Amino acid sequence: MSRTSIHGEWSSRTAFILAATGSAVGLGNIWKFPYMAGQYGGGAFVITYLLCIAIICLPVMMAEVMLGKLGRSSPINTMYHLAVENKQSKIWILLGWSGAIAGFLILSYYSVIAGWALAYVPELALGTFTKVENMPTAEISPFVDSIFNSLTENPTKLIFWHTSFICMTMFMIAGGVKGGLERAVTFMMPALFILLLVLVGYSMSTPDFMRGFQFMFNVNFDNLLYPNCTEQACELSGDGLLAAMGQAFFSLSLGMGSIMVYGAYLPKNASVSKVTTAVVLADTSVAILAGLIIFPIVFSNGLEPGAGVGLVFKTLPIAFGQMPFGTLFGTLFFILLVLAALSSSISLIEPAVAWLVETKKFTRISASVLSGIFVWLVGLITVFSFNLWSEVKPIGGLNLFELIDYLTANIMLPLAGLLIAIFTGWLMKKTIVANELNSSVDSFSYRIWYFLLRYVTPLGVSIVFLNAIGVFS
Ligand code: TRP
Image 1 (cartoon, protein in one colour):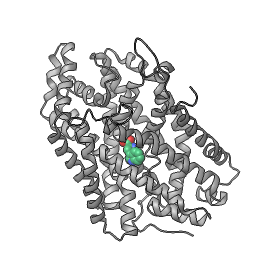
Image 2 (cartoon, protein in one colour):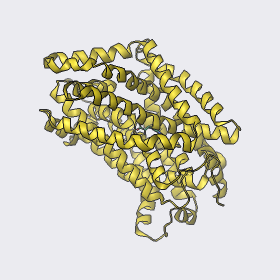
Image 3 (cartoon, protein in one colour):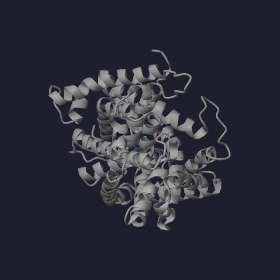
Image 4 (cartoon, helix red, strand yellow):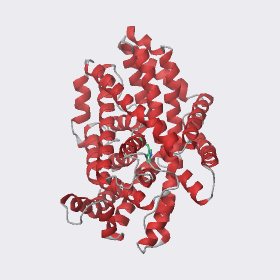
């Protein structure tokens, strides 16, 4: 039953690791992780996130890569083949569909935020932030706020950068597996990592490095469980736990088909468990590094860790404004951030593009253009939720951007993860699974993985879900 991918294959195992790391490492690590950790009070969020990665997401990721490697096609068709082969209902293709939809939704706002990073490239190159060097601390925060707000309050600017980023994504995706995706990630991942290390060096030199460090690692669960505390009342909420789990899925690109479709291009002899572990380690360390860079800057300059979506865009420019060669490093950093976002965005749309090519006989180019136009249109919702529609809050006090983010990261991804665990752990033939993992059913590591996948993942996700809707409180 061995299939081959009509879209081509990675040239090596390393190429897969780079591409999957490219998918995982992106705005999720550098933009989203720090601001969420900041909003949910630091340490407890970080620990929950790390725990979710280790016991829920790592097993799901192995399963997702393995499903892709077995199916060798877009997630929708992969789920179809595997459901038939394992004598399960064809309804499992809905898992592929929900992934494609989540991918469109996520990319629609991802490209707006990546557009912010693009907009910051000229801002840094022109030395706008060198002004902070001689500024009294009290003026720094209003200054960085004003630059950020002048961008987000202006729909025309946002649309310009959003459009630019979508065009870049379409250009890359049209290039195909080897030409476009693989070439792009080979040099930019290592470069980004090196620049992050330079920034950690800078952060360590700020007066409040230890405070930032403690903020990230001092575990105080009150901050996570009571995120909406006011002077008058504290309300127990499961939102923090849900957000940490959602972030773990989001950061690893799980539950959407990105990793499944990349697995479909994996060379036959590559070991699923080794490549997966490498990707998880790389992704997690980038998130932790980003936190270690950002929080010391926050505390040293009188900013708020809970500043929200603008956190990275307000903190890092201060660092670049103050450090030697800051203009050069700063420009380079935002270029690399855009590239990291690009290597993630192509993985968000690849499942849909692969499906259009396989099933609807589109060429890669026309499939890319069609998806791009669609995502661009949906992205306008996010553009306007920062300005014209900022007061439109249909459910739970969330604006439209926050709603799309909540629906995808906190609900769709973990739910798909749960279903992947059930399909692989309970419904697939054990021998097929073990065989694909090049493992014997009795080996120790296989048994741990199988146990986590069958019991821990489904239970863990369910408990966090039930907790979020208040069943335990
Ligand atoms: N993981 C990426 C990031 O951290 C974003 C991403 C790419 C993603 N593909 C995904 C998120 C699939 C969820 C699902 O920036």
